[in-house]
Length: 456
Ligand SMILES: [Zn+2]
Image (cartoon, rainbow, N blue to C red; front, side, top):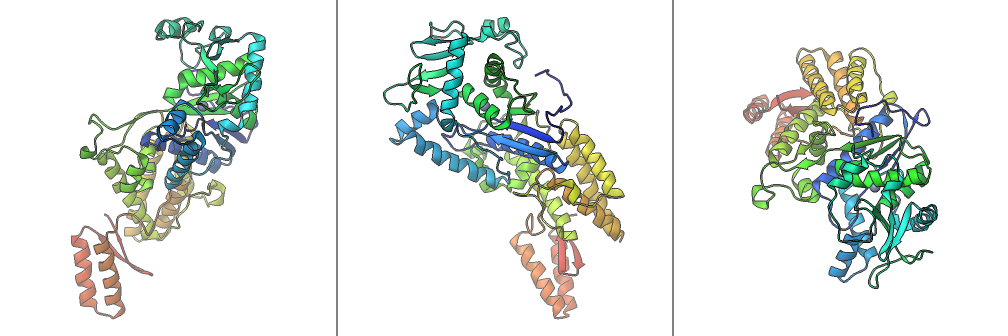
């Protein structure tokens, strides 16, 4: 709202209320949706990790033009389309390792409240009727343009001229769309119809989080007009709205044209079929949330290699996988000595506008230090660092996996054969198998549970 980073000034100390604009469910989620979910999942998890009580709400828009169009095309109902693609949405988000929101309001469950709000706008004169619906008069809100970072006059000059001559200004937006014969509609004193998108989020966020809630989030593209218009309605209704706003950046697919032959990813499902979901989270973490990220076969492969280093650490130290549906809390772990130092360093950069790339860099330095300490037989230091790395990644929702990662089938078989050879005290064969693994690029170690391999 102010175009700068500010302290998160909470309504109730210790409690954070967050509303994150969710999807309109008429198609498969794309990779940009994946980033959106991951960015706010990480913010939410980090706040919980730091000991705050977080109430996270994200909505489903289950009625809109696109849903209606698809239902017509497929000769089915709007509710069938919405239910099908909401199912696709949550299955993709689960695959990404995102925790479910605390509340998931659906627009169609809130139409009565929206009708009430729109009626009050008509009464107070900030809204007006046209032949196709009810519109909000943006000139009635004194600081309209606050989120856009432009005054009303310059927004108006830049707005495209519209065909709808009944609108007083091209910036005025639909609160209500009058019923058409072949579209779903709800009754209202100002005529049956359906709500506009901007009215849904203002009603649902205030209902579930209350006035003056802490943080409203979404992609940069939502800042204007969607968030501007949500805020305008709250101002017009005299209701204190979000105390802070925060927006995340785009996903780019490089200069390359999106095309199957180039191997670019088009849908999230497609990406997750070829890439470990944790690697996508790591790719997202390696950029600041407000910066654009490039998702290409090269950047995902690079993230997978980095993830393999983390999984190697997990194998070497037999670290338990953390993070998942559970939101980890820092106070559940032991922080002392070098672990405390690492915690302090990571917390400092994450608490400052979620500088995840710097946090990840600090953690990878710690991975290298843990491996070096273990090579030097400094087991205490090595283990302390490895556990701290595991805990801190769990605070960003990344689970290290000692069984997953980069061990291919052949290498896995060689490990098993070597363990069998050692059990049979066939040392020559065990050494031969060790050499074979080293040739394949592995560092080979003996542990209490047998042969452990990792990338150098
Ligand atoms: Zn919204």
